[in-house]
Length: 387
Ligand SMILES: [Zn+2]
Image (cartoon, rainbow, N blue to C red; front, top):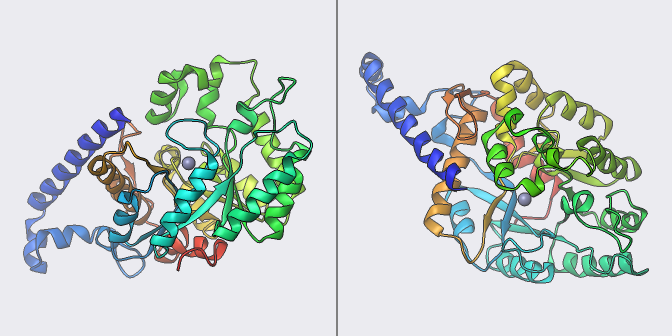
């Protein structure tokens, strides 16, 4: 986190330098157009078919992957100021400033009543009592009451498949039949199932083979989660298989694969996945750098992927807020990420990103594709979420 923020600052300096040098390199343009230099610069990459940097604030947007775990409103206020709406998801995380799920839902429902123009929320469930015969029924009762409060989605986390065990000490996998009635219930209520299954593929690679710095930093600091060091644990392919089994069993379930469904390392694999499961969608949270790594190697291929699957991809960040968050730091970080992502999708500028050693060229996606990624797909999948 600290590293990331430091690099963020460097990145900003890089942009300032870039802007200054452009101002000095192209004075004749400035004169010809008789516009303020800033205005001209803002038009890089924009035109009738593309948004520019200056459009960021005015275009309506949705960030479908946020976690607000306290009755604080830094994220909500900044979202409102920048024309964003949020989906604030509960998660079955033990600790890390995540309160128990019941309290997570209470906080989310409270915030939603207060700021329903900006924030919708999703619920989750715990595996407590897994070995009891009525575990699934209890979960369904809880979900019913959370839906009554306004929850629009249910999320499962990577603890399923990577951490949680039954009383015999066996890992619990997502395709365990005990989950079946729960998925059926979610589908019957017209709600959305969001799955964070597994980890980025980098988690199963040695540190020096990892593609992005955020993964390198995280797994350097958390060897306990670095699966390359734990060959006794299920493989990357195992995690994907168990998740895919759920989709094969529940073809009517509206599904969002959080973090690009852990297929962030290959648009070819993501393509196969989307072709195999017509009700599946992807969110981009915390995996845009993996996409950028690929577009540094084959920009057209990545651009074609976004255009081809423009109806199935949702913008999201994974921003988090709790009682311990410094509001100023959070605001600064959110603006850097939101604006950098916007530049990547909308312009063809060279962009320095903190997770990569060298700049990446923006994808210059057409406006109608960006509108889907940033809003229309979320509005279609969550029709009554934001008022
Ligand atoms: Zn998340």
